[in-house]
Image 1 (cartoon, rainbow, N blue to C red):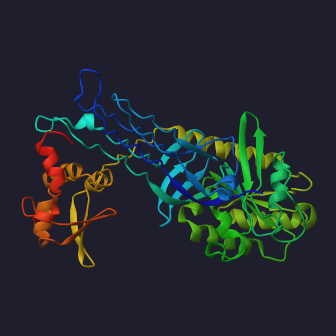
Image 2 (cartoon, rainbow, N blue to C red):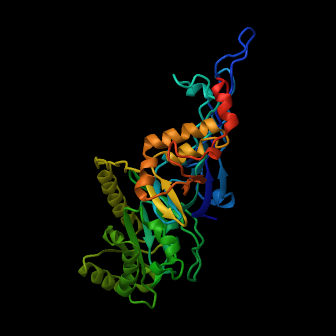
Image 3 (cartoon, rainbow, N blue to C red):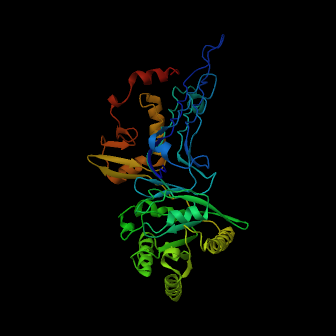
Amino acid sequence: MLVDEAHIFVSSGKGGDGAVSFLKQKYQPRGGPDGGNGGNGGSVVLEASTAVNSLAWLKNHPHQIAKAGVQGAKNNRTGAAAPDLVLQVPPGTLIKDDAGRTLADLASPGDRVVVAKGGRGGRGNAKFIASNRRAPGFGELGEPGDEKWLRLELQMIADVAIIGLPNVGKSTLVGALSEARPKVADYPFTTLEPSLGVVSHGDTVFTVCDVPGLIEGASEGKGLGLKFLRHAMRSSAFVHVIDLAADVEPLAAFDTVAEELKQFREDLAERPVIVALNKVDVAGQDTAGRVREAFIARGVEALTISASEGTGLNELRKRLALLVSEWRIERARPQGFELFKTTPNPITVEREDNAWRVSGGSIVRWVAMTDLNNAEAVAYLQNRLDRAGVEAALAKAGAEHGDEVRIGKSVFSWWPKGSAPLEAYDIDRETKLKKGRP
């Protein structure tokens, strides 16, 4: 059974921690720092592949977590980076966040997107050597991985969508035009999932699918329409099947479905459409002729067919092959490109309950990668934050000495440089630093 929706949780791997190590060799008991960097965590990647045709596996296994990077080691050895977690999805998959915003459209095989970037490996203490810091006793923690919930929606890749009210012969037409064998029966909503078929005419090969469940109100979720209307969105043309033997007046049936397409997405009403007047073998040529003339009078192309008998299908294949070929030529023309500009991410300070929330820039990542139990690492972090303008931003916002400040998941008491009370310092740590050893 086709599964065309999935709600998944993805989590990239944490970066490996940087090592804190000092060279220890015979005759060199006080060697310099030699801690290596941690490896990068694995990213989560979605890739369109023809090897899969459904989202069933991801729906049944919604939690996808990449591996973490390996911690750095002594002798300046870098930890191994974790492999990316590549998840294959069918071509035509839309990726959305929980707010409904489209993040990526994997329309063609080979399209891929990183949906959760792996955490960067932390730097070892050997990377923090400076003229005023000859023996750094700290390294960076690995950057935490990214995690989020995503909604995947499959929009079937078909050149032509066959639409119409229930029980008009859409599935029968897919089978007659192609080699597909969809379920067919004489009652509404036989089709509980789209049927896909491959059609050949001359040198043109194209795909067709039927869109089940279109009734009045389908664009609002009535019947099965809202679930399947999106499968028509990528099609270059529509075949609108009208049942000549039904009690519904043909033009009224046409208007009902056309209005639902327009309500769902306005540009769908602008796609080329061919009306297929089906069951001419039951209604008779006279009735079919009168109905066909009524559609032509409205400027709508109409052909009389019998999907069950095969009448008129060669002409329909010919017209569809021409429309698909013209559409492919149009798509092959250069379309230019859209330039995406990175938006500034300035540092912001906002009131949050009885504290201050600081965000923006890279400061959340800096804090997450700092060992807050290491006084030397915290002092290095404070210098970075001061240089980035965090202290000035807090002062401008009205923060007072000792106020609670939140950055990411961490909470601090704010003391401007040089104003912290004595108990804020680790006296034992300071004594050790004066002796030149961490």
